[in-house]
Image 1 (cartoon, helix red, strand yellow):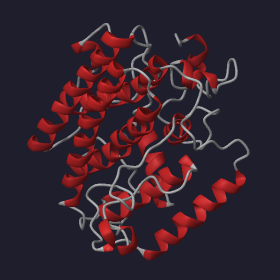
Image 2 (tube, one colour):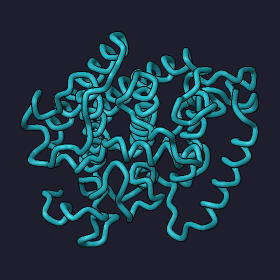
Image 3 (tube, helix red, strand yellow):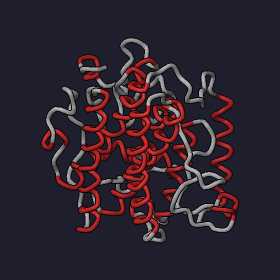
Image 4 (tube, one colour):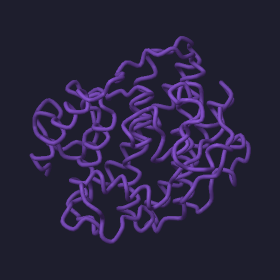
Amino acid sequence: MLNPSLVVVLLIAIDASLVNSSYLSCSGNISASDVDQVHFAMNLEFTEAEFFLKGSTGKGLDVFNATLAQGGPPPEGAKKANLDPITNRIIEEFGYQEIGHLRAIADMAGGIPRPLLNLSRENFAEFMDRAVGRRSNPRFDPYANSINYLLASYYIPYVGLTGYVGTIPYLLYFNIKRLVAGLLGVESGQDGVIRTLLYERQYETVEEYGGVTVAELTNEISILRNELGMCGIKDEGLCVPLWLGAENRTTSNILSADAYSISYDRTPQEILRVMYGTGDEHRPGGFWPCGANGRIARMFLDEGSYGDCVACSSEKVF
């Protein structure tokens, strides 16, 4: 069950973030075309494709489709995960679905180069440590077993889901709206499956964090994403207090949704803050150490501001 103190931390952290942000934007109404918006979504689709394909098959996107990356660098740190047969089959299917998503966007709106992706054990461990508030021992490894991999997966597809929900109201053209609605449907399904698999094991403890249960860690990951996004509650773990449950009648939370059981939305700025791990759409890091690609992501970066990695300065960006 949810630790009540986590709820207090969540609300305090969100309030503090809102006060301290001098250029905070929680509105999705930015100057961007429909094509810009779906190009932005490709950053998350690339991330999911590489993580799911490598985790389940040991092979990256380029093995299955060598053209979609458009010359973007290969991901760092992704590898075959030690998954049980059922989880492996599910994640493999998700990986192939992500190839389809990238093809669908590229066929309709053209594509963008794949950004540099940091899918390393160290990066995931850093995010998890921040969520829990202490260093994992041994270090958290998303590729070590099925529970760890599902917890790592918990971080990514849901962000894409909320991004699509936030995008649809600002689209103009029917064909793009239909495309994004279709993408949202499958992203929502993937997130629901991941959350259900974790819910079944909610009381199991995560070795790297001692007595922390699976459910508690999902709550803490959601708190971290809310803190980084800086726009209030857009994220909920597997168990919530009654006042956050559906119709205030349940503490189970297999699907994350608002008071009307409607999906939360996120803006591009919020997504960049969450995926960079910096809480700042102007400062790359985390999963996209050199910044995301596409016009929307790049408009928030100063020229030459591509994070801390040396390779960024010579990479192909768009």
